[in-house]
Image 1 (cartoon, rainbow, N blue to C red):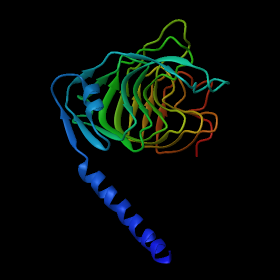
Image 2: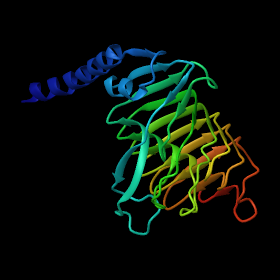
Image 3: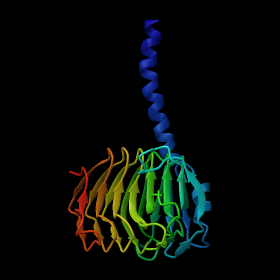
Image 4: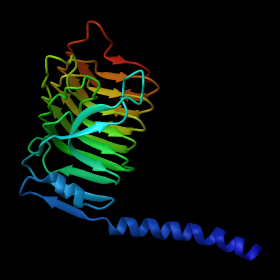
Length: 253
């Protein structure tokens, strides 16, 4: 029995290391420069793949869904009617634009790019725009929404997600972290959107650095419920709610 136990202690780390090496070596790089069905490529991609997105406009149609949890309701398990544009679900992917300004994702949805159950993803070097406000006032609409995922968001322009409807007071934010979100947000420009620049809800956490947040209708960085963040070297200016709120609202070091 002692020999068997020693064998187990030795073999399991070796198997884990081999599995990690195999997983990394099997990751692919996919390139999309023609056509416009980025979601089909996202669905086709395997865990840990990288998708290089060409310098063109990729526009999608909104997909309606029921969000089973409400980010900011007193009763957390309140169903919310919402829409998403692009969805990364149940796998890690790396979405990289070839040109920060010319690679544009036009989402036409409330949750522009939605990450759910994505253990180690990233999105970089592109523009996210063209969001459309959902009619349910409880929908946490934003250009990028992260839930139960770890996502690195860097060198992104989030601009002109400014659509509003008369029956809902809030608009579309920049980057929103929902339940279980762990985000690293670097060198992003969040400009001209219709809600908070960055908002964190219920257990979300973020490191936010070297970002520009301006010309929005909400606060610069909002930290609600038991969320937390570290923020430094960010520029936050010309927000519509500056007279009534701090640029950074909540528990943010």
